[in-house]
Length: 398
Image (cartoon, rainbow, N blue to C red; front, side, top):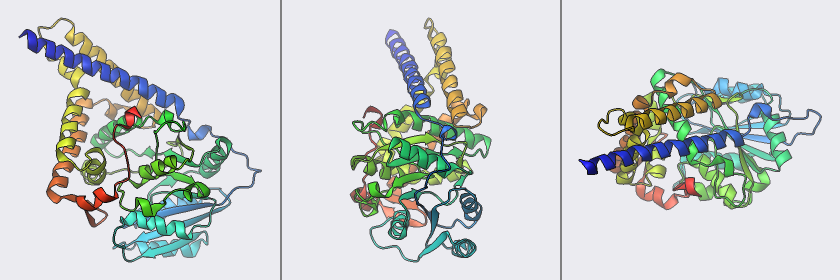
């Protein structure tokens, strides 16, 4: 019995230490990452040309309104390259109609995917080939932006002499359960990526955003380009790592008041969408590794709640209550900072098993399929391993 009690005490204390470190790192993130609404700009300056490169596959339901938000931005020197990536709906027709109404929009239609490429990477590669801007902005087709966004980020980059700026978007709320799960995703992402160290050239920390990756053209030309990344499923973050390794100066801003996107609409949609990155990046193509990590995550995240059910050990429940308080404070802080609903983020006993269950599902499917299904195309584990470029392992310690 004594041995079991020692194990239980060690478990609860380990959970407490985990959440204390979590609090420390979240506070560092909030302190170090600037808010986009606080970035200043000067309307009298001459603005460099920005090429907005947007790949789209079966986005007919969302692309029109999203592109209109960009066309309504007041940035005076911009072109938008809309790349139809083998869509099977009427995305092609929507893109052509938008282009016919505004000469700033250039349509590009891809009908076949060359061997050895992931579709989205090839679409962005084609966009770069035709872009004429001093800056490239890589962004997804369902992202909405507010006026002055480009002026603020370009001014910020010029002021700090940045070559790459990722903008963290607002993940728009959808339903109660999904909002709860996404709150964990955002919180853990903030912690594990060490975003406060991104601008430090001696640090290996890097960043990327599928919603808003702004890259200086001259810096991109110094990299191996998308030909090197062509089989990397996490293209946005891998782009940030490639730029950092080439000597580019990167940074991150919180754009939740200016840039927004529906990350997913349902938990089922998130489970399907998370298959590619979860199995390939976090699991490193190993179902055992991914499942083990998910189980550990469940027990360590829920340790203070489980402590409430332990009896016969002095003060163990008090430690649990104190740790729960810390966890709820962290969840509240992250929700406020990312402009997301607070209450769903507090329901950890519900959301922690769900998000880790999504990881376990991805591990099982990846092992059974021996690869991933993404954007209507199957990519085998054997092929993806050869093209893997992202080194995300133990980024927390780099």
